[in-house]
Length: 207
Image (cartoon, rainbow, N blue to C red):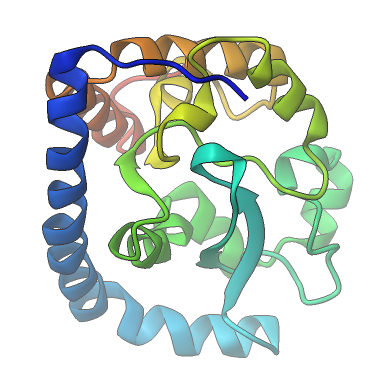
C-alpha cells in the first residue's frame, strides 16, 4: 500500500470534492428517483424475479472493502462474484435480461451508486472499484504504481473509463488509474465528467 503525499493544491481540493459528492449526490438521488427509480425498481424486480439491486463487495480507498450497489442486469442464477465483463459473450447473453441490457447500455444500472457517494464510500469521479472476490490481478497491477487507485476514493466514472472500451484490461486500467491519481484536481475531474456524459450519449468513444 502506497503512502503518497499529494500536492498542497490537491490536499485542499479533496475535502472540497467530498462536499461536491454530498450535495451532488443528494440532488442526483432526488432527480433519479423522480425520473427513473420509481419505475425501474418495480420493473427490474419483475424481470429478474428477485431483488432489483445487485450489491457486491469492492475495494475502496485504502483497499477497504465496501458494498457497491447497482441495478441488477443479470438473472438471479448468475454468479454474484463474476462481472459481465469477465464472461464470454455467449454466457453473458444467456444470463443477461433484456431489461438489464437496456440498463447497462444506458448506464442507468450505475445510478444507485449515488447512494455510495452520499455515504462517502465513492466519489463522482475516481478509479472504478475492483471486485473484492475475483479481480486480484487488477489489485496487483494497481499496487505497482505510486500513487495508485487506492490513494483516492473510487468513482462512478473515471479516467480509465473514458480511455478504454468496455473490454477489461487490468494492466491498462491500472496505468490510467495511476495517471488519474497523479493529476486529480477540480479541472481534471470536470473534464472527465464532461467526457463521461458525451460517451454515454455516444458522442465520443473509448480508446
